[in-house]
Image (cartoon, rainbow, N blue to C red):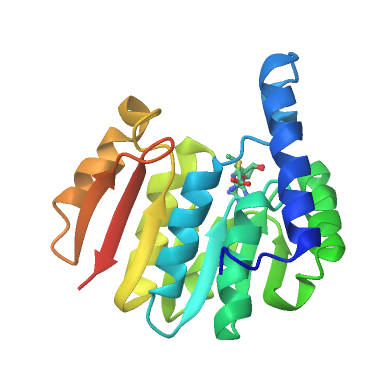
Length: 196
Ligand SMILES: C[S@@+](CC[C@H](N)C(=O)[O-])C[C@H]1O[C@@H](n2cnc3c(N)ncnc32)[C@H](O)[C@@H]1O
């Protein structure tokens, strides 16, 4: 998967990494920043997606599609598709460019809107990457977990760098009898849950 990333995907990933680094230092307002995962988290979710059971792949929080590209690499490998949700028009426009430029449109469905309006209807979820505003994490968790297949994986970003804000949801996951969970110290900290 990582040894033969197509040149146009590599190029867009590098461009988005540059934009994201610039955003973080040039005073770009928070809502306009891409706020992407680092590459090591991208590889981590890509491998986890490849290890997920059969079912629906979803992502909550597309931004410009950087993390989606890592999941889409898996979808290309196994012949599946990821449904990704983004609420902000400016990010949606950038994500569309990302998927078009990389010829990944066949592996990604971009839903424009608030993920919470759709999640209740998505059954048989086998992989979910949650990376939205921290205030909506717990609501998304409550909507996604009941709809996950046995062995399904949910990964939530920012479990270490936003630990205090996310603590109620992290504690809930760690004691949730429906799953096994732990926090993995990679990137900004990933809460990893596996449905029992
Ligand atoms: C941290 S960024 C995502 C970064 C992206 N996962 C990446 O690594 O490339 C969070 C994104 O989630 C979007 N978002 C926040 N709340 C949302 C919601 N309820 N539904 C859909 N998108 C949401 C924001 O507009 C923002 O673009």
